[in-house]
Structures are given as structure tokens and as C-alpha cells.
Length: 282
Image 1 (tube, rainbow, N blue to C red):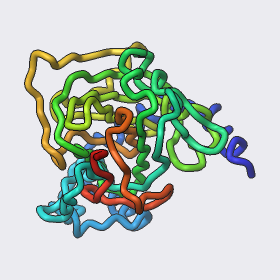
Image 2: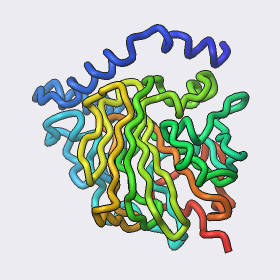
Image 3: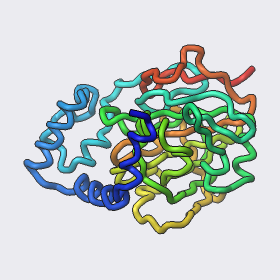
């Protein structure tokens, strides 16, 4: 079966309704039902609870509490590299931005302008720069950390679709990551400006940042923006910056000549938060 045929049902299903209902269920405190669902999820996806700060499945009051569980102290070491992986997951794609075009999968590209919600000025800062797309599977730790130290400048909520973001969908849905709902976070760093984008997906009930809390819902259907030039919000490398309430994808953008990726990186490679991602170009 072709990838386009495999994703056809996603065009037809009521993704928004499914996501809203999933979010309500994940937030509900249902006692034994919640515990049973968490236990089944752990068994099905092979979640390593020994890495969690609290490995006791029965102690989580809601599925969201379990899904956004913190890691135990020392579970992830930070590499000495200038740039570290911000999540547990796998490399979807990475490499050079061709003018303003980002490679999604064979036969599919999308633009930096589309990704950041239509802001051509912001997108222009990453012309011929670099990108990295990292996919978080259901079993992964779902908090997002800083790949390097940065000062927050802007946050942009961009409404959109809620397609799944698994590899099959990435191959089958044109412009997937610039089509789905997303939260675009813009930072200043030693690399210059960089963008860290949280991309939503089917049943991703919401996305949150440490400085704002839950960004969505609400889902007003229009672009919303917050500017932070009048606030000193600086996060250090490895510090938590946000989380997915049910999993998804992170897309990062860096300016031209800013960094050299780790030579061991390749598509589909599994990653852990804190591993070396690359170094500043010399």
C-alpha cells in the first residue's frame, strides 16, 4: 500500500473532535480506569518507568500526569557539544535549508515561511540555514529541553490540521509540519536567532511551555503571538522549555553557517535528550 493511500483515512476522520475528546480523557482522574490504561500503555509501548522520577504507575492521577512525567535525577547526561538533542525521539530529517525550502520526505518539501506562520521577516533569517526534525514516539519521554542557552524573544501559535506525524504520514501528507497546529518559539543564542517549533498531531491534547503554561486549548482558529522583549526569559542548555500532552514532533531552524551537525547523525537514528547534536561552525 502506498503512503498516500495509507493516510487517506486521516483526511476523512474528524481529527479535531478526536483530539478534543482524547484531551479530556487524558486529563480526567478516573482512579482504577486511569491506572489500567497507563499499565496497558506501558506494556504495549515498552515504556521504561525506571527512568521516571516516580516509577509507581498507580500514583499517577491522570494519563497526562503519567505522559508528562519527569525523569529521575541523573537519567540524562548532557554532552559537551555546543548543541544537544532537546528530546528523546528519532531523527526524521535534518540538513541544509535550500533557500527557504525544508526537506520533509521524498517528494515533499515545505517553506520556512509556512512553518513560522507566514512571517517572511522571521523566515528570512534562516535562508540557506539548517534544520532538524525530531519525532517523538508514544514510548518516549515527552518534555522538551533547550538545545543550547537562549533568550526567548517571541512565541507564535499557528492553527492548523491535526494529522498524525509518524513516518508514514510524513511521507504521505504534503507540507505536514507546516500544515499541522504548532507553537513556534524564537530565541536568541550564541548561534544567532533560532526557532524551536512544537508541532501538534492527532490526539495531542495540548502543548505547553514553562513560561506560559498550556498554549492550546484554546484553539481560536487564528495566529496568536506573544513578544518578550520587555521580559528577561533566559533558559540554559538542557533546561526544560515545554512539553507535549501526548506526543508529536519538534522542528528546529538555525541560521546559515551557524552549526555543523554531529557526523553520526542519520535519518531514523534513535536519540536521547542531552546527546550531542552538533557544534558551532568554526
